[in-house]
Length: 223
Image 1 (cartoon, one colour):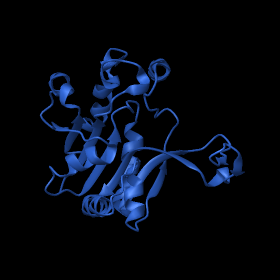
Image 2: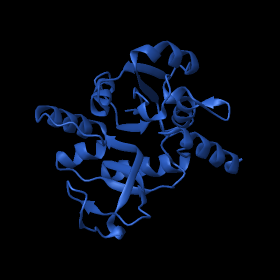
Image 3: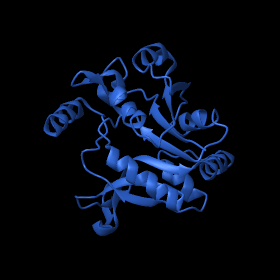
Image 4: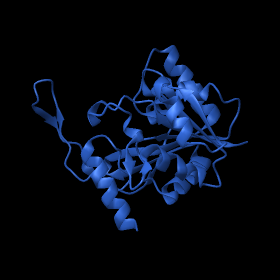
């Protein structure tokens, strides 16, 4: 069976302060979504890419992502709903690969390592160790505890799962009226475990205008 990537591109780009989708902004002559999708098209272990989009962006995305292996699905109001819309179009698969369209700098190495881990453990996600000390605060913004930084990981994407397990997990969340902002939470909620693969700090998420400048700098350094 095939491995299918779902690239999420249906967000509203609120923090970018731009009228158009942040995924249509350019980094060194290519749009963010082009760079994100191309990583998966270049991977021999990925058979198909599904891109979730806002209805108003379908025509534009279709014009710049013309590879025959790319299909489009209208996203939902939340991340979980967008992924479900894409998953519902898939009859069967081996692994489902979920990636933020706003992470255009993910490397083939990170993708490959996470695929191998998902094949072995059934669920895997790329992440990096937290550099800063993290504090837990209460509603009045007073510190209540300090987690051990050695046990903290900042999760990125791709996040890769056995297709059947993921589909069962998302159905369970729907039945319980739960909506998660992270796909690993779906597996955790269903009682599963997710293997973390250490990635790199350059796999940034484009969120604000400063992130475009940082991405350009990273690409320049990569040559």
